Length: 362
Image 1: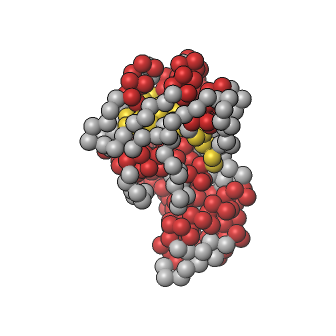
Image 2: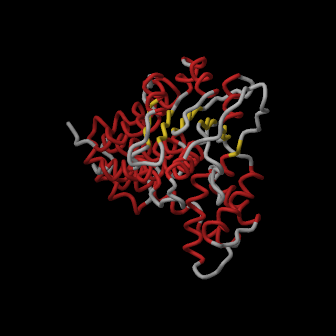
Image 3: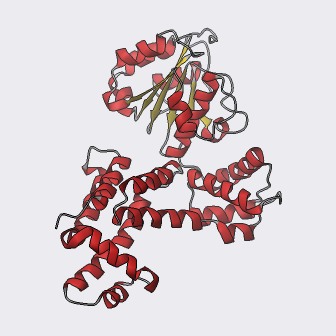
């Protein structure tokens, strides 16, 4: 497949950005373009828009249930980290004829610095893009008044992946339930979902899937269904991640973290849940060091009776020194998520979980 010939930027007007909800809907991204800019702060929307582009480029049709793995397995797909990306290698990859694939797709992730450093060269590429490859720039900021943005709109597509407003979410949730499952999701039920989960598309999509399984043969999800089911599974997953990390199951904790992040859970929210639980573990541990009995220490720290035995096992795994350092570890992780570290948010949380899960040294 080749793309339509391009024209001068002064001859063809550019269009408005496509919203990510349009691209990841039942109609997909539409006619394939040679260059895309995915911009905005919602990781779920950027990820799903990327999957939609890959599916269209590779002619794979419907979404794969394991889209991340499907993308990685595609011979024609290359992913490059923006801060380490080299312009010449990226463009050579896009322009190289595909082998055992319909066309090449090169995805530059976290591409803000890459775009800033190579703006002129990217403008030249956008004006005359590859006829057999697709370049995807995934960025957080994308000013629409730049020459590059206008060239992308003329010859490709920019996709708005910013956190959506409530009215946009309401319509999207209804279409998601209908298109994917043939189930009705009225606005009052969708509005309650947003109130319980927050305006996070990734988490909301997971909750829709759970509700469809819950209602079974019924073809409508009611507000009562939402009230009974939404949020419970996510809360249990967060607790499961904390339990696995503080009892030494590093692989299990990282697997749960991956599911939560893939579902669109915000790293800061996950840290808040970790902090709430670990501060209680720390408090109970300090009381035990002061010769308080386990049950009494847990009750004073606000730990429920059903979790007393588990807290004792957590103290045994962590050891006194690590229990003492829990507030410091949480503070360091919070600062790292706010920019004090060069690690990305996933790596920051993974470092915390691995630090909790490693065997005790005292």
